[in-house]
Structures are given as C-alpha cells and as structure tokens.
Length: 139
Image 1 (cartoon, rainbow, N blue to C red):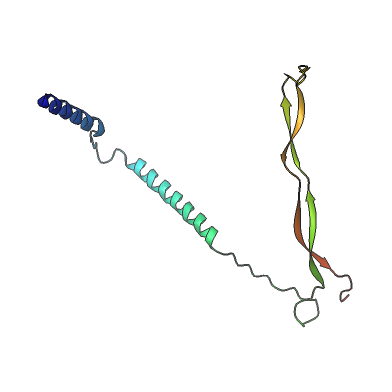
Image 2 (cartoon, rainbow, N blue to C red):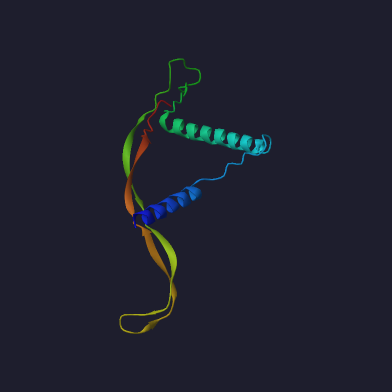
C-alpha cells in the first residue's frame, strides 16, 4: 500500500515536471535578429512615452507673458480697471432619446412602442469667476 502511494506520487510528479518544462531549441544565431531589434525599439518607444506622460503630470508649466504697454507711454504696464465677480449659470439637464418597446401598462392595456427621452444628467447651477471691466478707464 505504501509503495503504491509512493509510485503514484512519483509518476504524478514526473508528469507535472514534463508539462511545466519546455524544450529549449536555440536555433541559429541569425534567425531572429530583426525580431529582437523590433522588440527592443518598441520597448524603448513605449518606455519613453510612459516617462514623458509621467513627467508631464508632475512638472508645473510656467508661462511668461510680457506686460502690455501703452503706445507712446513709458510708464509701465497698462492698468486695467475692473473687478472679479462670481456669476451663477444654469446648466440644463441632458436627455437621451431611447426606444421604449411595446408593453402592457398597469391597467392591463397594450401600449405600442414609442420613442421617449430619458434624463441622463440632472440640471445644476455652476459658479464662474468673471472679469467685469469698468467703463470709466483712462481713455
């Protein structure tokens, strides 16, 4: 009985190793050179794209804007009169047109199929910061 279990477990182990292992046939040196080059170039391009996308997320963007000068005046940038205000704006709900197939209603009457509008997003208010210019400027 003990030898039977040992023999069965040995056969199962050898069979498992045979399934897991693969044959290693190397072939000639020149046979797959261009496939290796293509894989290497593709990996380099993919790695560069991943690196650039990572750096673009974490790198702050600095933009320098030259101050506008009034023509013929050397006193520095033009002063713009005005102020910022918060403006409330209504964003209407969004509807999608879908087909409602024929069916029986609660009273047991047949309702034929028809198109209907289903609300996909609710309407809501948003607040925007808006620059309000004063009309009593320098000119």
